[in-house]
Image (cartoon, rainbow, N blue to C red; front, side, top):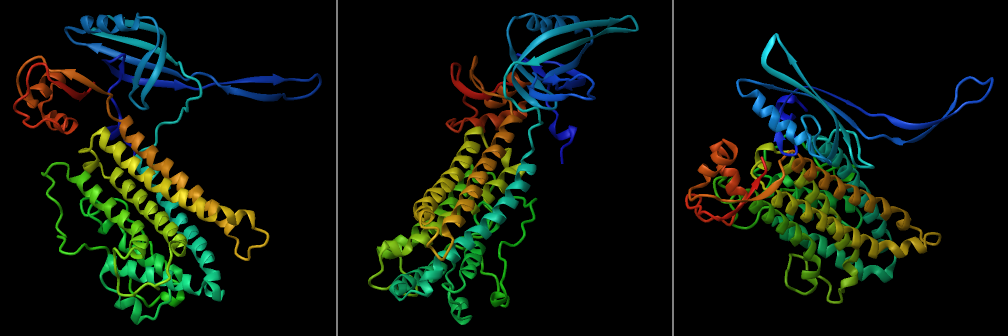
Length: 467
């Protein structure tokens, strides 16, 4: 939910803050009208949006109102464009002041209103308010649900020839053993699959369900830190044949503690993120590691197993891992308390990690199934049509994660470098720069290189928010 209490920002122009009592923003479009004699109406052709118009009423009051107002109007009198922090829309990087009016009233002493009119000085920008991470998150979760279904359909069709062609019998054995061993290694319990007599080659959806249950973000190290505002629906969709099988337990590393990490320790969120992505990377590497006999499971691989036998399985693993990484990042971005502890570099790192997983999945899918497009007319399985929607879902997921990160960054002031002018500590710096000593924790978060927050020396250069 958007609200003024949570989302309004301090208005500023060229770094000078001011109070606002009202705003009025307008958007108009250029158009060409073609009218004809004795014909009602006109043909109207859209020629594009005009520059956005921002009208703000700033107020100054108090014994020193005139001094503050003169400092503000001095900035207004400077030529050229500047950055406007709109109280609703946030940062508008380049606007041109075209008019301002100063109003005094005898009934309101020591008070003045300044009417401001700005035009946005950039082409091709959108006029919509930036969506909150929660809005992006809802769209992403829907996208990821569709990605799971499309990846499952593609994998099922890719396995269809394995069950029919005798020449592919060895490949089928290799993939079946690799799937069982993956669950064995990650879950440490294969008895459920064996008791149920499940053949993952006949029902690959069961394998995908079990693997997603193991990789449920809520059971990974990061998930145990988060406040789960997003009530995820189970990623497991049971078919009639699998309806009686209990969901697979989540991943639990041997000898790992299930306790929530100490939030007072350095960078617990990013540490948990790295632990979680390490688990995802392990899933991707398992099939090849089994072929090299670096990892062994309960079911031995055929002696003649080769890397090409695992192509479809590795591609599936990369796709599912990318899906879970995107979901995990979205859950993090929607947790206001945890995200407040992350710096801009941390946000970029999370988004880049997700994009890396997604790019690996896109590359593997294209390389594995691109040839199927060329033989679409002769292929009994429509693989050439099924792989493209998977890639599109992955691309849209990557974009959404990036937009979520950017939406969070947009709510924060610009980062800058400041030079310390006197010896002291971070609490003193926070009070000097922001008149708020409690922002010392923020300064420490932005400067992980600081070893002793109570020993800040004159001349030190520190990363800090501009306001």
